[in-house]
Length: 88
Image (tube, rainbow, N blue to C red):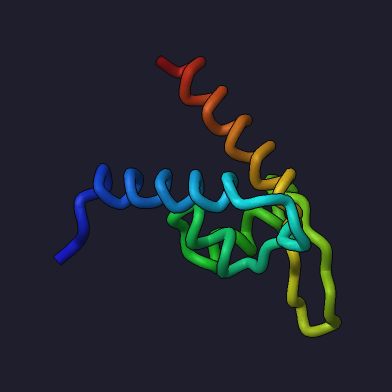
């Protein structure tokens, strides 16, 4: 059974809000899995966004492990929300 998209987005927004309210610390870089969880996307989609330049990321190993700056996620969300507002 597929969850209600509105419910998933609401939970995602709550989770993201809690994360942003945390005190500044060493958590300025996120793993691909963390980004996927916060954006309610698959890890594969996050990798695609990195490959297409939609998300900035730092390659930390030769095996392809990335870290995504929190600021890059915020910029991505701002761009996407602006696109939705313009389309309305």
